[in-house]
Image (cartoon, rainbow, N blue to C red):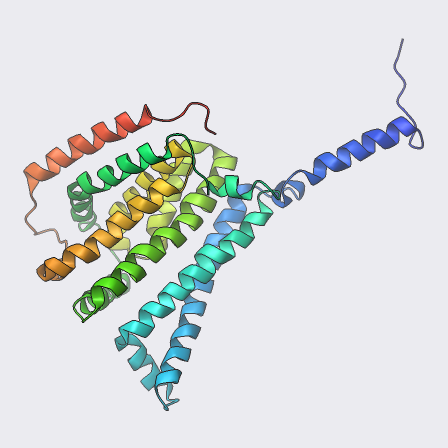
Length: 320
């Protein structure tokens, strides 16, 4: 016998319609409105880049105006480029306000209430501390490999203005780290803040949004490349993207941001601490004609590959 459909005013129809409405409300905003997760993530990457620079510029100008009576734009720009305290304060403000706090707001479009921390992987897991320890070891033994990738990257042609911009940035950081009290400030501005804020944005938000659309393998690789490109250092893109992929990988294995945050801090903060004891390393630049420690690089590549393979076996199969 053919089953008849309930009429619109029938109680059964009202129950079905109510059930469909409740089901729709359980979906995040992007899915209710037909937007792919990856599109929203890519849009936010570009918006965040612009907002980061705007926030940094505003904070920088306010900082300069608070320390001088001059309102001459040329003088303000000159002081901003030489006042490292204000410059790093501006950079840190942009990271906290845009990469961290604003990203937490954008996540509301991708996950319903109660699931946002899980979406960002702001959580612990059964294997999180083991993966964290292995990630810390990974970022130590991989340094010669990263140096080798930087050397390979130096052979690639780059627009002159981008090369000059990266050189200026490197000189600025080098000059800052040579000043008094640079160790503590450097560890905070270069180590702690990026390790937290950039991980929330890239391994938390961008990686998960890409994973929702394309799966975990594409999410790890593409989020790593986006992380490298976001730094606007084309002559350093390959090592930065590789570091991003490593941090995405340990995030996936642990289902938590903690290992990536620790690894990120070891990479950035470790360089600040090392430069404090060996200031001469600040003047070293990766170039095609530099001499490389080939034996150390080969050993690093072997150990890094072996550790990455071993870490895969430590993933909890019950994790998402």
